[in-house]
Image (cartoon, rainbow, N blue to C red; front, side, top):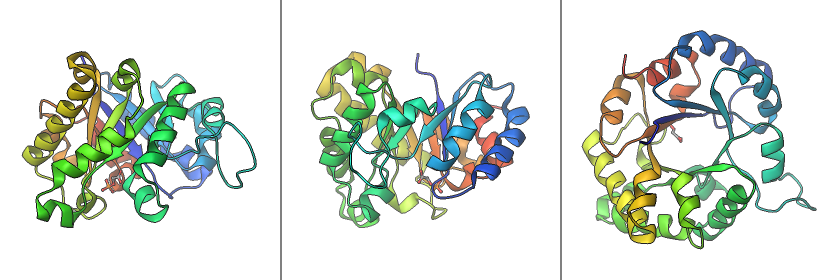
Length: 251
Ligand code: PGA
C-alpha cells in the first residue's frame, strides 16, 4: 500500500523566524493526520531551525535542490550530505523552475537523483510539460523523456522508494489546475513508464504526486484518483490553514 504524501514547496519564501512560526501554527492543525505523510520543503536557511521544531511531529523535512558533489570548490552550492545532516529526508529535484531558470537538463537532474539516493535522501523528482507542448499534443512524449532521463542508471529498488511529481508547467502558480481526469491520465502513464523500465513491483510502489495550483478546494478530488498518491503544493503551502486543509483532504 502506498502511503499518500503531501509536500509543501515554499520556494523562495519565508525567513527562518517565519518558518518556525508557521510550524508552530501548523502542528495543532494536522496533529490527527495519520492518513498521509507530510513534508515541508523550506529554503536552505530554514532547514536547521525546522529540524528540531518538527521533531516528534511526524512531519518530514525536505530541501528544494542540491548539488551532486559531496564537497569541493563549488561556491554557493549545498551537498546531499549537508542536507541529511541538517535533518532532511526528502529533496525536490528537477522542479520546472530549476529547469527553466537554472538550465537543469535531464542529465543534471539524473546526477542529482543518484547523489541523493546514495546519501539516503528520497528524491521528489519533478516532471511536466509546458503549455505549448500540451497544445501540440506531445505531453506523454515529453514526460516519458524526462522520466527516462531522470531515472537512467537507477536501480529498481531505488526507483521504487522515490516520489515522482507530475507538475504541468502551465498549472504552476497560475491558478489553473489540470482536471483530475487529465492529471490521472498522465500520472497513470508515468506509472506505466516506470513499469516498462523496472517491472510491476517498482511501478506499484513508486509514489506519484500531482502538483500545480493544488488548493483546499481541489485536493480531495485529485487525491481521489487511483494513481495520484499525493500533492506537491506551492502557493497554498505558505499558509498553515490552507496547507492543513489540503493535508486533511479526507475530512
Ligand atoms: P503551485 O506550485 O502550487 O503554487 O502551483 C507548485 C509547485 O511549483 O511545486
